[in-house]
Image (tube, rainbow, N blue to C red; front, side, top):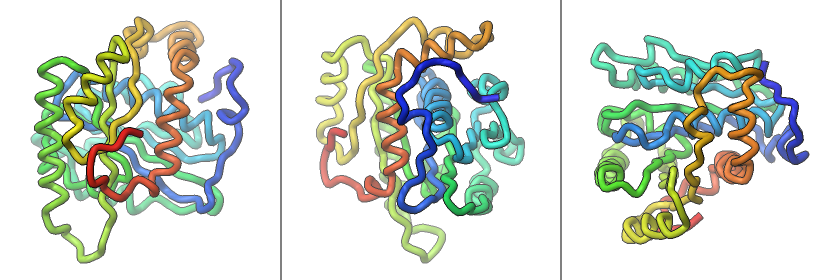
Length: 263
């Protein structure tokens, strides 16, 4: 059962319903592996669950390594589901876009209950193979300052732009997802500023940095009473507040910025 006994701010333990309860969909994506997608998905799911105590939350793990789903299954309960279904994959290992879109569209709407879908996407899959991204409200693109991560992230952003420039398969006008770069596992504000400089010529949102901590090395371990997860959440509460706020208010971001925009 998803319940932690530690002191958190009241806003993180109360039921929060927006002006209009709805389903919000976020995905952590980058063709580069090792940028922290699974860890961020873990933090975000648990943050949403503790923030809105009545919400329905699904972690959909479309990474064949199943890192986040294996770690979060122990927290599953009647309102928090962890999905790692073969129907979400093609034989090639790429996402089954049709089944994923059908799953998003099939979620029941319950009055006064928010729903959140959080996708942990695999490395190696380019946006042209992931048309389901069009259905998402927010696409979080984590990256570090390493040359390999920056290069892969630059290519991924260009591929996302090409995907969104293609005519949609339906005639219905759907707002473009917000694309947010997440400086992840940086060592200092200087590193975050360097990433900001690198991407400053691109029309994207740029998020708050998540600083490296040894706690992240133990995020997916089995530990007595999940103390490792508790410590991780406590140490990064400010970041969890920030990223869950973005998801709660994602409709305000679904208008592509004309230039670089610091959140």
